[in-house]
Image (cartoon, rainbow, N blue to C red):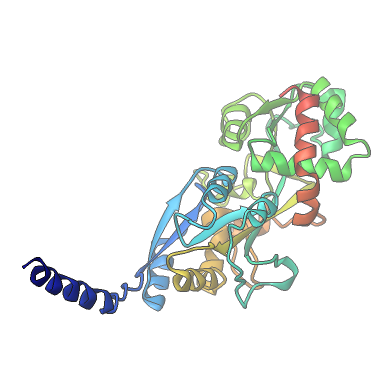
Length: 337
């Protein structure tokens, strides 16, 4: 009796196990992980969705450092398909952790390409100063001037352990100052103020433009004066801030297909689209950085108030990887951070 009852069950289970597994539906959404400064018009993203057939979901996750740290922790099992916003100061950390699949868009400019990722835009970290404060006074001509007595207690910078522009400024000093450690000792002695983030430095400590602080010199971006002009009450008017075009540090932002992405096809399509004319023509207006594709449009204010620095400090990700942690450790010991 028991054998009669068991036999049909065995037959049924065997039939079930031999049936082909259902084919999963291909993803219809591509998830873009990025930093809080990412911006792009709805129309441009809608154009991609129409052309590719994939919907785009944008997930923002703090600043560049937070974004990269999160990607490293989830390497191989990512929370999205594409990561945009890792720059050359953090790229090696992501590469060493296996964050990215090996994909570079065919249209990528060869001089900016790094293994497995695609360059999307460039920027420059520079000193900015408050024009009003320096009326009748000489603004600094380079970072080397900041240790002079006339600039005592005037400068605010970001902590390189917590801020991407802060790290970029530190690296520019390691490349340009004959004794960079002594430079920072002198800067500390001359009253430099250190804060954790660009937002704090620019909006709360800096006295120029949108800032509400008392310090007329800040580490910011070469495009910050153009942004002040574009968002002023009279768009296009002369900005209240200016850029010191000396010893600026070149940043390059990359996009990459994430290793283990649920939608690698959509991820590759989105990375390719980021080098299209439609996307590149908006990176200046939307994110205040320079497009990497030659001939892409930039706002008029860029041409007048934010030309690309003539001779920026350039470091490869390999050079940065070799020195970054040691530079930060030495800086922290000098500054007591």
